[in-house]
Amino acid sequence: MKEKTVIRNISLVNEGQVIVIDLLIGDGLIQKIGKVVPDSETTEIDGTGKYVFPGIIDGQVHFRDPGLTHKADLYTESKAAVAGGVTSFIDMPNTVPNVLTRSILNEKYQLTSGKSLANYGFLLGVNGDNLDEVINDDTSELLAVSDDGLYFTKKGNLLADNPQTMEKLFANCRSLITIHSEKEQLVEENEHRYRDMYGENVPIEFHPLIRSERACFEATKRAIDLANKHSARLHILHLTTEAETHLFRNDIPLREKNITTEVSVHHLWFSDKDYSRLGTLIKWNPAIKTEKDKKGLLKALLDDRIDIVTTDHAPHTLEEKQKPYFQAMSGAPIIQHALPIMLEFYKQGLISLEKIAEKMCHNPATLYKLEKRGFVREGYFADLTIVDLESSWTVERENCFAKCGWSPLEGTVFQTKVTHTFVNGHLVFEHGFFNETRRGMPLSKLP
Image (cartoon, rainbow, N blue to C red; front, side, top):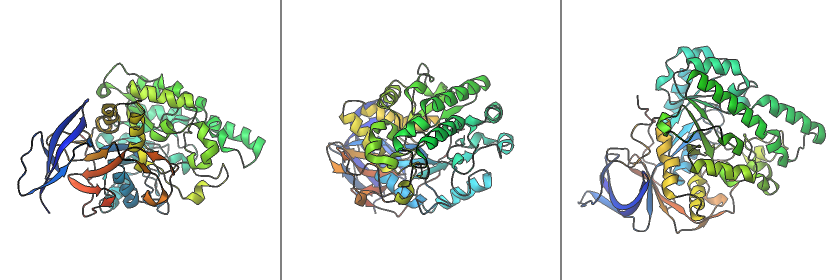
């Protein structure tokens, strides 16, 4: 195998511009951007007519490993990730056991080192049970702490429902705090109301009314107010309502923001109109809401009130998804299709390629302070995603790589295709085939 690779005559989407260049990759790094003279030790890839992005960084996934591997695992979901051009992911703490201690966090890193095809990072879980331990620890070197997903394992674990716990954390925590922002009290009141009307078989169309705009807005506003009071670094996960977007700033650069947020691709792609067609397959928490919300989220993404795009990739088996409303699990696989979704918006004239790179590559690296990732720069890790903007394909079960084996996007025709994915200079995915001879690396954080 040759030691270096040159990608010749490719359109680079990077740092606000698109330019046609050569890229030289060697020793896992981007060695040169510009005209490259190859030698006998260089493999050439013709990039003519194609586009290359910095590797996509997904800041929120649930890969289910350890403890829930009948749904997904670190190998299968990282395979789906690189097939979709995602080179790095950050996994949430709601595996089994929940990642509530440093020892469990370290064990998860050790487990992943032999399994993941993509680069990986993990968040430390925080709730009322381990709050004192977290605030007495030096968490500054962690990517972040989070309560996301923990409400599935124990009621009352959401910080948004515990203002005293949240305030104590905000006043003392030395790391970024990422939270799932819904008022469970309001959600439970709505659940009781609709259960009284329909029993256990509540129509899925009521999901965005049960997990309502009010439940989201009030939780997010309270969290932001408390974070501002204590100058804490707060990141609101998977924003879902147009109303919430007005709580965030776009008048300062991301590096100067203490309060940030994200949108997950399914909240940009689907709306409440899709429940009649897809049912509980698109049951997510927070819920997919209205067309107005979908458009408002995209507008806020474009004007920088929303900082990054994530997937909230959260696989379940079809059996788990197709149960009655209250029993049907929330979440679905989508990491393989996140970039094609965003490129479809580009095809529709709704977003630029440069903005996609900003929200899916540059900003996640900036927000989580990732070392030498998220940008195409000489000396940075060679995490690269090559796409063909003129190649159509149809989502089918046979071409979905998530372990659960299905997708809510089945039958969707995308007009663009990921053709190559490099992770640390290793060409792990090429035209549907995988080279699994190397594994990804743990994400390092800048001081």
